[in-house]
Image (tube, rainbow, N blue to C red; front, side, top):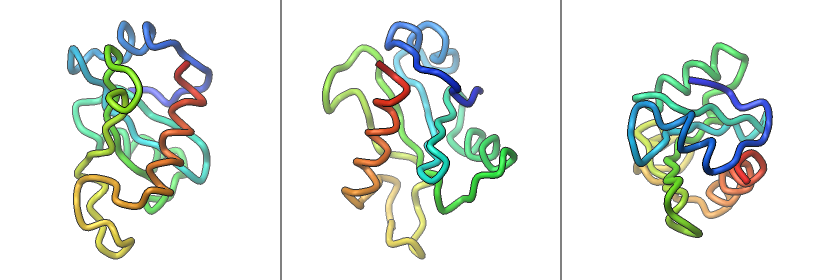
Length: 112
């Protein structure tokens, strides 16, 4: 598990941050602080790491990355931590297009 501090390539994502799953990397984005944590068995582990660093739970959104896929197949906006009816998200998938776009932009900021 690691909070990214600098940009990485898709090759680095695949080689360094796919230790739990061979073809996928779990991630959590802190949309307020502009942070991404990667590489854990569960999104909740990454969520906890960010919370310990001062993030607020309502700013955290889970996603999955597939280094071997391009375009829309690269990011999947699904995680149990995304289920939060009080914020209007009643399923594992991020429903709000604005939040999805913010997650995508943050991923694109760190993974080139």
